[in-house]
Image 1 (cartoon, rainbow, N blue to C red):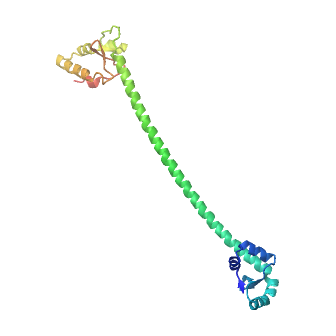
Image 2 (spheres, rainbow, N blue to C red):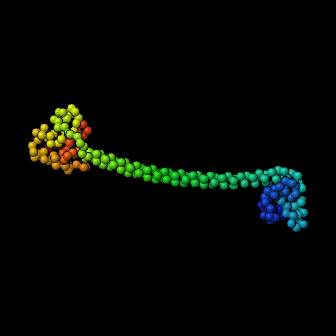
Length: 217
């Protein structure tokens, strides 16, 4: 009775490598039938063993080396193919894990950047508010200095603040319009950093600001 390498290994609970090793060391009787290597089953009946021995010797002489090498090559090719498939699957899995990791890192980076951008905007708004409050506070302090009353030409030349009433009189604006303009300044005081007040009077600083929107008739 003839057994293939897989059948022999299964029947006698041996690994394929051990079976091939015994074949190479001539410890197993083999026969080559239809271009396939077979092992003579030692547990077969005497008739089966005798018939196997009839074809064993000539086949051993001609095919032991070639047949064994061919079977081993086929086995190695099969194992190599299985290893290649496993390696390919592992590489695909690694690529998938890398893609997932990169996606997670990208999302985390975008989230952190968004947080910092929001914080920057909040900080910028707070700084602007503090700066405005400080500027308004400093302008509302009464300084013990005299404010010179100058003409429009002098104000332009010397770049010094001019009192609102004095400036309006220099423009020859009627009293009704002057009251309307004063009311604008009073309403905007404390909200508009351009408007300065001292001793209850409003002052214009043309060297720094434009008041055309408040002075238009």
